[in-house]
Amino acid sequence: MLWSEPGDRLPDLAVDPSSPSPRARQPWLAGVAAVNALAAWGGAVALATAGTDFGERTNDRLPFDSLVLAGLALATMVAIPLTVLAWSAWTGAARTDGVALVVGLMLMGWIVVQAVILRAFSLFQPAYLGIGAYFVAASKKVRLGPRRRGIFLVCVGAVLVAAGIGLLPHLIKNGLTIMSAVSVVLLLSGLASLVQGARLALRDRRRLSKLVGGVAVVLFVAVAVSIIAPAVAATRVPASDVSSTPASLGLSYQSLTLTTTDGVKLAAWYVQGKNGAGIVVMHGAGSTRSDVLGQSAVLARNGYTVVLIDARGHGDSQGTAMDFGWYGDLDIAAGTEFLASRADIDPGRIGVVGFSMGGEEAIGAAATDPRIHAVVAEGATGRQAGDKEWFSAAYGLRGWIQERLEYVQYGVTDFLTDASPPISLRSAVANAPNTRFLLITAGNVADEGGAASYIQSGASGRVTVWKVDGAGHTLGYDTRPAEWQQHVVEFLHESLS
Image (tube, rainbow, N blue to C red; front, side, top):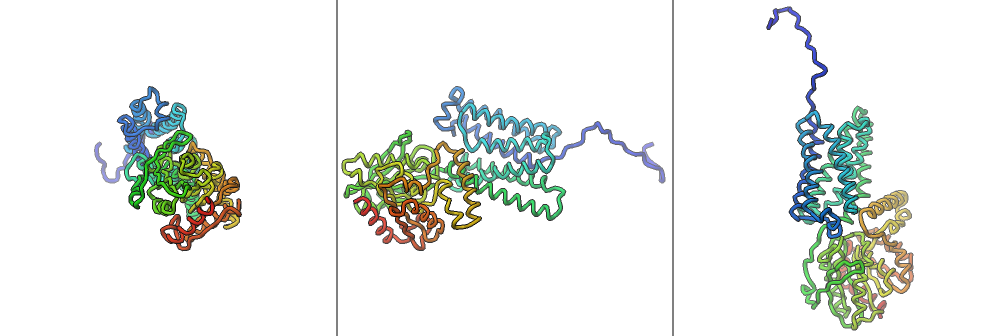
């Protein structure tokens, strides 16, 4: 009977437990996989077409020295599996969890194999190990309860977000590049992991517990960003361009190529002076020698021979940039070696003038190069954890906590760079008995004064501090040009006489 009469009882409908139930889509998983698949396809195409490479040293370690083969391997081992996972998660296919587990393990294995073959370590390895771990956790094949899985995803997401923020200068400064695309991929992947992890960890909790848990997640992410993002930013520096030359200020100059003792070629300008003293000028992080032309012109017009250097990885110089200045000793030594080799320069009358990172490099170089007899450092605060040991005395508990975070941050930095951590600036001053120092601090940046006082305590008789009232970071010359010239020139005359 195909119909029922009124009052008839409808039969119960039974569901066959063996029949497969439709799976829900997993948009977060699909999105993370899709974003990373696009990045992998872009990297594969760029490698295969020689649009990018790994650097000369790492290229030589590629199997068959082939970037094309590397691009094909990236497509096969990473891009294609991620594409399959993205489609499977978006369509709600029953096999999605298994695919996520396999893809996660493949991605983690790819990173391990890459490290073994290339024998090079970088930011991308821990970042993509984290993304692989995210896929493994999201697969539900690993026996973790929802809360533990959520906590794990929050940890992975915090690291990815921090790394993405550290690479944002590439997007801000240079627009769409491979590195800026990686920044976006890491940020989106990290945010997805954070949201999904927080939802799992806080699910079925009371409202107050959810509020407390949410605040804990935010604080955890903030700490991760404060530790990891500066380390990433300092070791993955966007390209910077030379914008003007000494000719723009009416100075005659020559272009130089200086070679450091570790074989890096540095671009420099040479402006000849008349008084027999030579000054190496070093710019700050993320800038070039063009940005210190005004101060260099003051030195040249007061008779000093000036060598303006693009730090490695900046401007027209070769090498890998490191914006905590850990290569500074080598870069500056190339400049002092050039000055000391010239017949018109008295080797006992060589100094260094540096700004921000360049100032920190100048202080550090004085401890290892006895040819440096005078250092002017503007805006120098620190380039390793020991430089921040005055925080606890100045700021109490908050300063003590910051000191601990600084040690972790510089430890992460040490992992991400081939450069070795330098000695503290205070120790450098103490280890340069034949050098006098002028530390210029910005009146509007309180930490510069605290840092200068701490550095000065290493050798108070040879260190002078001048605070430029109303000035911002390294803006002493722009704020008070006449006073800047007076203080700097008088200091150099006395120190290099």
